[in-house]
Length: 60
Image (cartoon, rainbow, N blue to C red; front, side, top):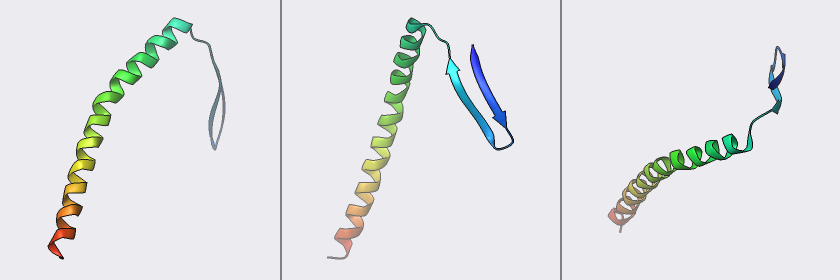
């Protein structure tokens, strides 16, 4: 059961009823889904670092 209070400015969820094992399963799936996202962010950060590193070397 989900209790929701709504008005013109937004919605506030006040309670979620969920089985413990369902919550554990959801959290495990969320962690597994985050791994590829973190790898992509790491690659982007590495590329940005290489670009800034190359730009700083050009000036010297």
